[in-house]
Image 1 (spheres, rainbow, N blue to C red):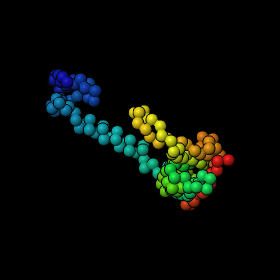
Image 2: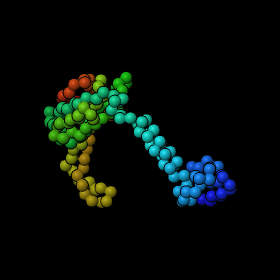
Image 3: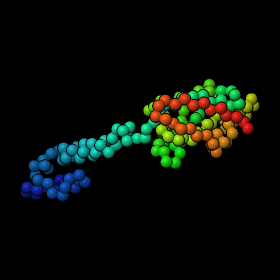
Image 4: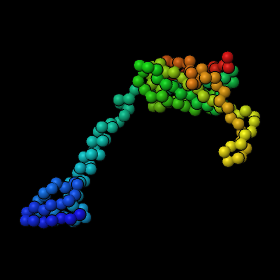
Length: 174
């Protein structure tokens, strides 16, 4: 950076300085010219971003706790996931939870939006066969075993109330 002094005014070739500054402002270190002005701009920008972001929870959709069980042909799903997707007209984002030993749970802070939600359930299991992975090593073969009508083409829907919700999903192969 080059500072030129001429009488009462100096000219600094810096993006954060105005073209002409009083001589008193130019007597600071050439390494950090007008540092207080730059710091003030930075603090104002950060403050504005914080105000724009807000707390998030006050303006978001109302969420509710949900827990329950998931079975397939009468047996608990050992490993899988359940997703709640708000239907058209319900404000909120899809949320998911793991299914372990046939059970799932979401707290009110992380739960689905209150209102009608589509339910998507996925689960995998070992086939009893082995296959080579990309490294050439043998590993257990895994298959998705839940019919598409419970996931990709889900037919399941639940009404989530603002209270705690307990749901039971009894899936079948037919």
